[in-house]
Image (cartoon, rainbow, N blue to C red; front, top):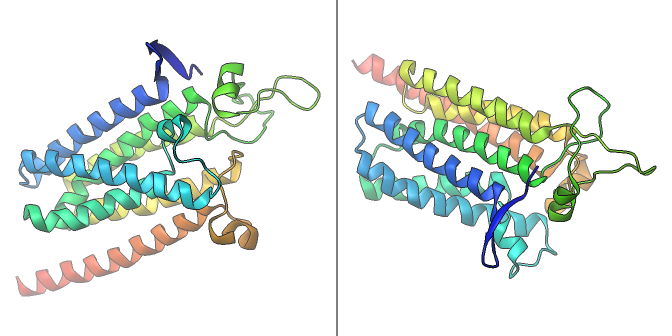
Length: 268
């Protein structure tokens, strides 16, 4: 719960930024290793990975603007914010879809290589969220509730005291997602070695993460906006709505790929 590690002049070096950078580097390394197993050239994957990071950054900021119309764009807070993850996921996915043909790579093989890396990056990113104090959970009296520091409150607005002035303990939603996604990373790496068809790892990631995020949203309590009045209309958060779409799309992809795999076996 130390949002800022030190300063270089007036420039703050944040714990969130360090975790995010380390997560991105490890994600790219893991992706290159998995891509090599499928016969994809590492140098192409590194090039593509950099554009995926750019697409993810742009997408996360764009969705943040949509769900929080009043957000001030030209501020340090906006620049240092990680944005909305699902926007980053969509932006990164589009980068792969657009650039894979230009790099003459197989889309499904490339996507299978990137999916575990994304999960690993999320695991580190949520550790950064915990350190900064963002993406906090609802109040809880369970033993694993966490109490944030006043530095975290000053940095992100995370509540630290209750109405009566007593210490406030919250669900550690950031850590729950972090450790869950670390386990998902291990599962996806295992699946990558045993996949029955190209695209299976991406599909598994889409279904699993959609379920994880949909569930965690019930115990989150930070302001997350209301995209096109979705939350007002349904009582679900924007991320829960996107989770339903991602899960449905993943199932459609699975049906498509299974049929494709079946047709290939018949031909063989």
